[in-house]
Length: 428
Image 1 (cartoon, helix red, strand yellow):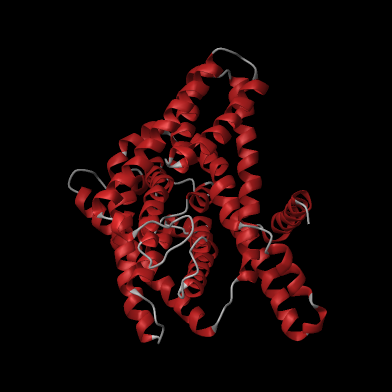
Image 2 (cartoon, one colour):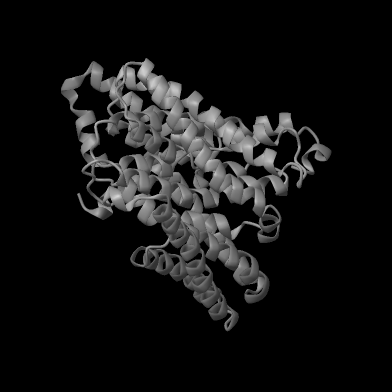
């Protein structure tokens, strides 16, 4: 099957499922598409159990197997989705909350990784599963980052206070860079590791991890700012919405492609470039017409790719080997991940509470708003063939499905309950 044929199938199914959701279910797009694709996948599996001779599931699996989810998301879709999300971030509000955002994205993520690793090691042992400490920590690293795509999709329907949105969105935009560094370092410690994450274990130390993080994070930020500034200067010199939209597209694709040979964080580069173009660029380099076309173009890109992503998450379930013991571990992992999220939010907020004002409900809101999504699934799929890979992948899927379908569908209700009035919402 050609790439065009595969893309045609994906887009057609996405469009049909999107119509079903809009016409009948009327759920938030991310929740609705994932729910429909998941229900379709489970229906196929049930049909296969009842009528195995039909051979329908093997045929569908053969098509799905041609989709490299990790490659599609981490080396393609993520660039467009992060830029589109950062384009709408209010830089002034984010900068005012930068202390909270940085602590949540770094210290909070490391705490969550450690807590998930410790609790999973204890609980999985009680379930009779042989899982190493390192594998538990790897699971902690890949499941701890809040997914910017899922979070942004949820924020569109919330109408939350600006300061609260800045904390939720800012953390999700930046903590995936930290998570990838921690995940890469832990995978490199695996005995006999092979593949993209392989390094000699002796080379991995606290100093090398710190150096890797600085190179990825600061290098990615600088790349995004430099490329964004060049695009900004080009936009400033003309007034043509067709060319300026094309410049923004070139900025995303060229900068993200350049981040790989430079060994810097492409996601962070996208966030930096998106914020620069969305704030300074929109204010000084664009006419109202250009800004309107640019915003609508990236909104459309964002909606289409988001829809495709959540469809693929539901369809990829067909490729996961769900065993009863592993599903049980995944259900327990939901509780563990939420508990770790609570601790990882409570510690930074407590450290900052004396210097900054927070509503009493902010810890509970940030805990429930910490959605997991495609990035966690992509990292789990990128693992080398270790004995624990099937368990980690199953647990990741169960946590992600719960996060998007349950947390994503109820976050608005939770926010309305915890922030009942405009006075309560003013300082969060």
